[in-house]
Image (spheres, helix red, strand yellow):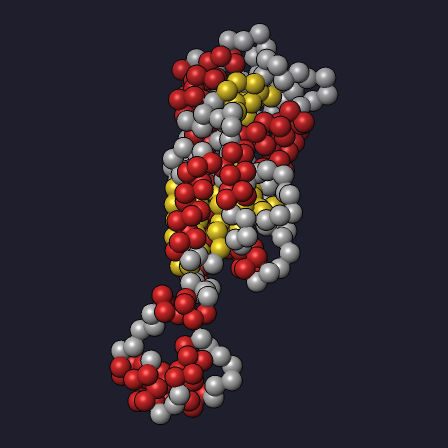
Length: 327
């Protein structure tokens, strides 16, 4: 920096102000400094800058799972928004999701000097462990769990998405609407199952209309076989995600059950390929990129010392050929 200052004929403080876009530097001086930077091929040292300013311009992102489309899409949104605001992302994917692992990841982020942390938590265990480990660190929780007010939090509005699907099916005359859940400890799965129960027609029991899945197409297939051979065959099936819905469609096809004329099928996510299933799948679109952008915005607010708040990102109903009037 001293060499750049000498070439530009200014102080090192002025060079620093130009590098940090300080408004007090004149246009003419900025131009001289930038020309000197180009001539000297100067590149700022992030570590040295962090020591001086106390800011590393790096954030940590902790994610429960990167194999699902949702967390992957949110990560992309976070990274793009972070770069646009001058930050870089350090990412860690959890394996067990146990509290000691979460604590180790957070300790690693702290050692890196991150300015804040975003945690994409699929389970309550990860959410709780993150809150405990991140005490005193600006942290945003991306999770479908109650908002405590301690940390900013957000997620896709799971409950409203399910209500839209159930309103569609009930409007088509369906009363026996079965549900295939996701994993028992997954917060999204729990939120969707709870919303499904609350939207069942009055007097309709959920006892024989619910089957367990694990987000995979295979589990959707197996769950469908148990539902259609049970005591109360459904007129519609709400699969907790699109992958399981693909398994539902295969099972019904193999059993000679027409979709949507005998049973309507809906999913949740609108993943790639949902419009190419047979028939094309009615589902709930989630904007994970918008979720990631909003998470970064909330983290910047937290870094700036603003009060914690909760955001719910809206969903979009996509109606295709897998739903029809109840027969």
